[in-house]
Structure formats: C-alpha cells, structure tokens
Length: 248
Length: 248
Image 1 (cartoon, rainbow over the protein chains, first blue to last red):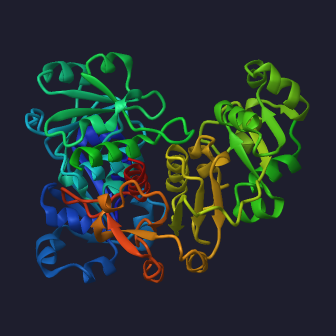
Image 2 (cartoon, chains in turn cyan, yellow):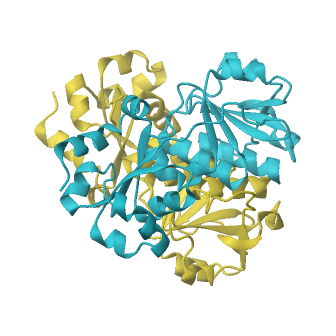
Image 3 (cartoon, rainbow over the protein chains, first blue to last red):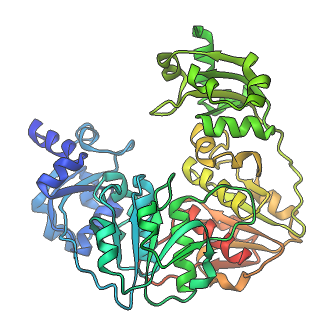
C-alpha cells in the first residue's frame, strides 16, 4: 500500500523544480525500466510495480532489485503514473551528473537553441544515439531531459547521450575553434557538410528557428533543400536529416 | 453568442465518426486558418473568432469571409477549441475529396502502415510537402488526417498533399508495376535508392514497424545506417531521412 506521502512525492517529480531539488526522475513501462536497470547508468532509488512485472523480470535483475520494489495495485499505479495508460511499472532514478566539458574536438555535437516540445527533445536524443553523437548542449530554455514525456520518448537512449544545460551563447564562444553550423531556411545546401568529422550543429526553436544572437556565432548556415511548398520541417526531422548527411 | 447546439457540433468534430458523418473538420489559429482560407482547397463553412482576428485579416479575406464569421468571446472560444491555449480563431471546413487513383507512375509515393500518432502523421504530411511528394496512401488504421492534432501540426501542408485511406495490401498489389521499398531495421543501406525517380516507400507502425503481410509486397527492404545503439528512429524522422536521400 502506497502512503500519501509517496504518492505526493512521485507526482511532484512531474515538475522540473522538484526534480532539480530531489535530483531524481521517473521512468515507466517494463521495456524502458528494464533497459535502464540493465544499463546501470542511472542509480535506481525505488520501483513501484504490479505483480506481473516481477514475474517477467530476468533472474539477474530480480536478485538485484526486488528488495527495492513495492508491489502495488492497478489503482495505485494509476495515481502515480504520468501515462494515459499506466504500464506495469514505474521506477524512480537518480539523475546522472552531466559531463560539462564534453569532448567536442574530433566529434560531432548538437546544440539546441530552445527546443520546447518534450517529444521533439526525446526524438532528438534518439537521433543522437542512432548516429553516434555523444553530446547535446541545450540552451537554458530547452525542455528538460528528465521531463517524463522526454524520458518515455527516448527509449533508453537517455543513458547513452550526454546532455548539458548551459548558456549556449557563452558555450559556443568558448568552443569557437570547432566549426559551427546553424540549421536555417536560407543557407547553403546541407550536402556541403557531408562526411563532416568535427563540428557543432545548431538546431533552433520549433517556431522561431535559431535566434539571431546564436546565428552570429555560426561559421555557416545550412539548409535542407526543399522540393515543395512546406514552410519548414519539424525540428527533430531536420536534426535527423542533418545527422544522416554527416554520417553518410 | 454561441448556441449550445453549435458548441456541441464543434466539440463533436473532435471525433472521427462525427467528422465522417458531417464531412467536416476544424482548424485553429490565425496563421493556419488564414492560409487555408487563402489556399482555397477546403471550402470554409463557418468561422468563430475573437474580434482581434478580424482586425488583422487581409482586406481580400475580409470581404470574402466576414459574412460567415461569428465574433465570439474568449470563454466561448475556450469551449469549442481543442488547443490548450485557444488562439483567436477556429474555422470549420468541408473535407476535400481524395484522389483515389493518384498518379504513381514516374512519381514517389508514401504508404503508411498503421501510423498511430497524430503528431507523426502531421509531421509526415509536412515532410511530403517539403520534398514534393504528392501522395500518401494510408492503411485503414492510420491516424485520421482530419484529427485536430494532425491538422494543427501539418501547418497547411494538408491542402497540398493527397491522402487516401484504403486497404494498403490490395492497393500495393494493384500497383505492383512500381518499385516498392519497405523501411525496416535490417535491409539494404538507404543509399541504394538514391535519386529514385519512381517508387513507393512504406513506413511502418511506431512500435511494430512494417507488418509481415506488407513487407512481402515490397521489392526491397531499406535501412537507415546506424552508428550508435538506439534501437530505432522515430517513424516521421525515418520518413524525412528517406525522402531527403531520394531527392538528394
């Protein structure tokens, strides 16, 4: 039986302020939770699960995590879940320490200038993981990587990509030795950076694009050639196409 | 003042069954609504707007649409809007007649095998519009193109792309003369279809991918090469990368 205090604690982890204070977040569903437990990147604090979750768990995870698991009832899971259809298990993890001085030399890094939509951020984290991009540097107004919608949409890529939240204007200025490219609507065709081995790619806000102050810090503006009439592409789709071209 | 019947009518347009019966859907926000009015592809039935919408409208649209506009109050717009932040105007349009025998010869067409997420469908419609793909053939379980989330996320691309809902197994069998490619996780590298001039690209469901029955109808399986550990890419991102490569 969950106490009122526990329910309140988990519900409050839906808010960034509280996640920051507690240094914690939660993930849901057997696929994602089991992957995070196996991945061992995030320290697990507590698990709340329906009995059926336990029966499907690999022996090795069972031995390690059963003492931390509270087995609860459907209606209790509904109370703490952020999903419209709660899915067997919710686990609370400690946030990981970001690597604030990531290796950008000889690497491709992504900078996000105010990506607002949690779904887009989650998708971009998966894209980074797919194309082997280790670092995403987020502006301070970018959606929080521990937002439950982000966590759910990353499909465990969260444990393999390093996200930093910082003033990107300062960060870009400090990393001026690396070539910087801004994704815009009126730049050079994307093919001009094919097979790039070292660079920083800036993806802008969903409606405003890359802000003027940040564009100024780019060495080149790049554009995905258009063959139709759409005004723009979704920010995550643009990020995916750019990473594809770089790795092509 | 909106009548109860009008409020009920617009609210019911959030459900596919009722949209089908009425042959109508709605769009919201000045940018999208004005573009759809200007585009003249969808016949406008009614407009419900705050007074400020009218003051910003181009003269030509004013002359044409003011007699159809009911000026309403904030609290009324809140009642009929599907947005968390209602945005000045909601317009009801007639659905357009799909072209059920689209020209696939010498063209690129997209087939969607049960894309469930309305946001993904809207994003794919924008991708098609960006890359000049005229036709999207949707399986009967794909999200509805007139779902308000789809409409809002297409950014008026809805009027430039032809969507058909049909049994895609039958449709693909009928179009066997055109090369058919299925996007999968274990196929030939995507570059093998670079600069394709004629073909049908199948994008699968978000969690299950392209179904076995449909894969059988493809001439080739194609894959976006991976350089990391993510299990998959978001379906709309995959569609974007494939269209980019084809037009490259």
